[in-house]
Structure formats: C-alpha cells, structure tokens
Image (cartoon, rainbow, N blue to C red):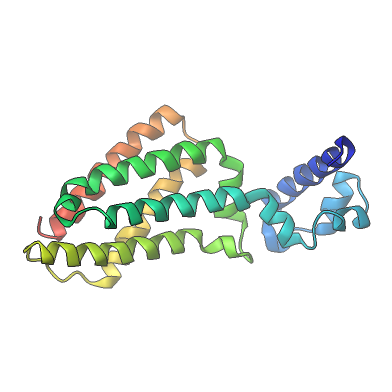
Length: 205
C-alpha cells in the first residue's frame, strides 16, 4: 500500500471512529464519514465493501484477541488434571483477566465502540458470548468437583447467568470509565477475590 493510500485510509478511519462514537453503528452515516474524510464514495469502496466492513476494520482485531484469550484461558483450565483445578481456579482467572485488562486499556477506543456503539453488528453480543462461555465452563467445573467426590449444590441457571453477567460487566466498567490503570489493577484483584470467594461459597467448597 502506498503512502497516499495509507493516508487516505487513515482519514477514513479517523472520520469513521468519530461518527460511530457519536451516533453508534446503526445511525452512523457512510455519507458523513466519506465527506468528513474528504474522499469520494468511489475511493471508500476501493477499501471496504460496506459500513460493517469499516466497523470491523476498527474493532475486529481487538474483539478477536479478547474472545480468543478468554476461550484459551477456559480451555487451559479444563485441560488441567482434575485434582489441580480447584486450587488453580482463582489464580488462572486472575491472570487471564489481568492480561485482558492490560490489552483493553491499550485499546480503549476500540472497546468503547464494541461496548457502546456496535448495535447492529456481530460485536454487540460480545459480553453475552463471554457470559455464555463462563456459564458453560462453570458447568464443566461442577462435573470435575463431583468426580473428585465433592457434593455440589444445585445452582439455578438464572443465578449463574446473573453472576457471570455481573462479573464481566464489572470488568468492562473499568474500561468504559477510563479509570487510571493502577487503580484498575487494584479493583480487578478485589473483583477476582470477591467472585472467586462467592463462587466457592455457593459451590460448597
């Protein structure tokens, strides 16, 4: 890509980010984006096929990292020997969420777009998808505890969903409010301690 093309693409991205942040994906006007960028509609379509492709260009890599890292952590935990899982649960969760916090703070605009401006795109379900993964992993952990001989109380799936949604939502609140990173690290540790202790309590551990 030539320097001229990179410059044009940069103008489109800057204009698009401002438009999406102000109006959200659905209400954002491609005409306004092109006009603000100072390029023709034809030039725009030389780079992207649609408004959604443009939105993906802004947030896609950040979204993919978030989801893949979160899935990776759950898969790693599930592949641990059963007897090691109870002692590693809080530790591995804390490591994963710290990695995601660091990444999120380096990509705040992208996650603001995903969390607040993505209605009408596949990215709007990010928190729901993470919650679903958390609940599924929790069910797998129940099975492990039972195989280890623990008596696990039946936990209503509605409560599981509420707790997982609260945990993921609390994490992203720190990103949305753009709090100082040093404060966020402390809060994240406290959140992890809170939710780990809470889950262990209702699981009878």
